[in-house]
Length: 247
Image (tube, helix red, strand yellow):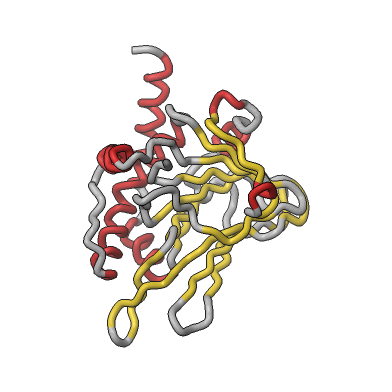
């Protein structure tokens, strides 16, 4: 067994140990109530720095997006290529089963027949069979004046309904502003906004597209978008962990 495989196996073990330690009943309740849930201290400050430091090294990435060129906002991001860095790949695999439980319950409440397999690798097989073979985890970089417009990360016919963003920078020290924002468009009602406070190493799990909300006459479907408010000073790095692959 070579050193890279051992490193990835150890990273997967560490990710499993961290993820299983959270109160997933409480996190699921937050996702049901607010469309998002915070996992505090998912990664250490040292891991945050090491991950952010990958950004200028192109060998880790498959593509580079400058947001302003596409009307996405201001800032930039890079999509990781396979194999993913050990920690990112490990967290993607470890988080998925817990989120799949929530996602399956949501689909049941919304009358959607699709159910997600328990293991992430099985879900990726479905994505790849549908022609979605490009990895979607990404590393985002913002500087003063940058922002990310409200959007949904949909990359093909198959979309896993929950994703995770991990803040790698420390608010107040590395940057000011740059709040994570989630909006929820409700039928025949005004939209609701949720601003999620995060510290370095915290992660937010949130609905990608639709989620069910319990109303007086049963469940109804709401449409969500997410973004990042303007960076008023400094630099902000984030990792996005998306569970479906792209065309």
